[in-house]
Length: 258
Ligand SMILES: O=C[C@H](O)[C@H](O)[C@H](O)COP(=O)(O)O
Image (cartoon, rainbow, N blue to C red; front, side, top):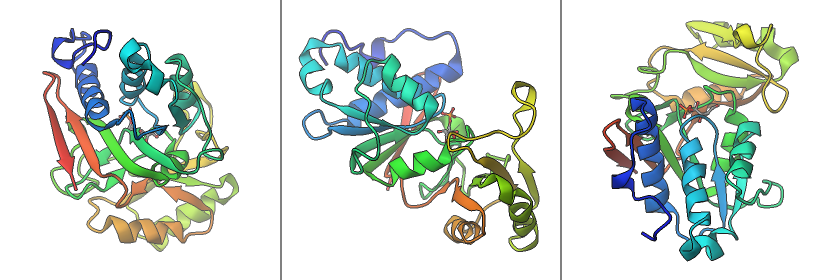
C-alpha cells in the first residue's frame, strides 16, 4: 500500500472497542473489494460503520498514488447522513437518477444470517439503501461481530423488522401486520427525546418495527409484508449482499461469502 494510506495493522486504537471493530471491518472491506480501475460508481450506505468506509476511500483520494483514479469515483448516497459522509470526505457526490447502475456498494447491517440475508433500517434509512444496494453489481456489508446471527434473523436483533410506510397508512399497516401476518409486536418508531412523535424518514415516511420472533423464511416474510397497502419497503434484504465483513475489537475480521 502507498504511503499516505494508513496500514491496517499499524492503526492506533480509537479508544473504544466497538469503534475499533467497525473500523477494522470497513477498512478491510474497502481494501479487499474496491478495484480502482473497474469501479467508478460507488454506493455509500448509512449508519455508524459505513462512516469508516467513506473515511477509507477518502484516504485513498488524498494519496497521490491513487488520487487520479479516486478523484473520478462518483459516490451515490443512501440518505442525508450518507450524503454528508461523501461530502465530508471530499468525495464526488452523484445521484441514483444520474447513475442508476452502481459498480459496488458498501453498507452496514443490523443482523446478518447464515445465508447472508439481512435486517437493515435500524437507522431508518432502508428504502434508499435498498434502491442503491439492488442497483449495485456487488454489495458488501460491514459490521461489528455482534451483527452476525448464529442462525436465523431475529435472534440478535430483537427490535423487529423495520418497515417504511406511507404515514397515513400506519393504523392499517399495524393492524394487518398483527392480524394477517401474526407479528408478535408492532411499534411505530418514535423520535424519543429528540422528537415528539414518530421518526420521519428521508423520504417523509414513517417506520414501523414489527417483531416476528425468529424468522425462519425471510424471503416469504418480505414478500408478504410488501403486499400490504401502505408499505413502501421492508428492512429484509434478500439475496442482495455478496459478502459480509465482521470486525472485532482486536482488529480481527471474519469474512462471510456466498
Ligand atoms: O437504517 C440504517 C441502516 O440500515 C444501517 O446500515 C444499519 O442500521 C446498521 O447501522 P450501524 O452500522 O450503525 O450498526
